[in-house]
Length: 312
Image (spheres, rainbow, N blue to C red):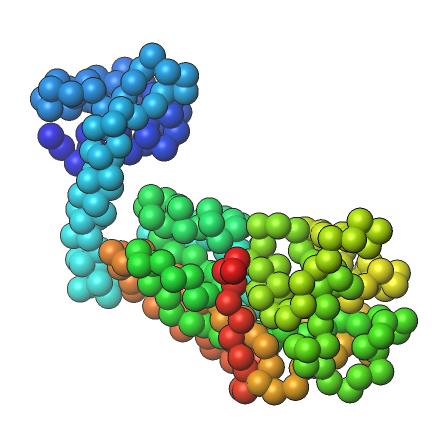
């Protein structure tokens, strides 16, 4: 049994296809198939049910994949230890970012980080929180930026910043004349929300104290972007809540519609998260310090109440 064989097994388990797995591991398909066959012969079991399309893990195969992932992670730790000892910050680093953070945070730190750490090859994916957790646990991401806390025993979290919620209230709305808002003012029945799957949506729902009614005559709309929600609010279709950094790009003429909350202001905690195996910590720390440095000057709010991003 070799580490290489285990990596091939993990690749087939992920892609459920020998040809795709071979492409991803940069070997020929016959070579990959032969090595997996040798491992199965050595263990005297079948890891994959090849009669299924796509290929499926056998019951014992699923257990082997779980253990193989731990073994490969521990093997990777050896080179990681050497890199840390040498003070080397470089190599490929796979980072996931949730959609409600990507467009505001990335432009703030990316150029700075690339210039400071030119040997790091960042591969960035925009993913929702559930997919990020899945890919971290499978070893397909080195770290991610997401709203926390996530309450996952396999994931470690290091807060980067606390981002207040800002209300966007159009002129015809019942709350427009309020100087500041409280959570008691909010009603999901006139709230424009992000579509299901966004943790910010769940945070807004957790923040609101009232429950959406089932009245079919009520107008209800959910969107995948804050920009669309703002445009719909401008059409008089309701109010919405925005993360603070998203308000910085709103046209000056529309900023009269911003309403802050009374302190402690509801906010989301944004963290860099990574697997408990703690691989590539030197790059994670470099990212954390770079991001924290650029965001510190952008968010001046101190007295905040963290709203859970989990669907509760």
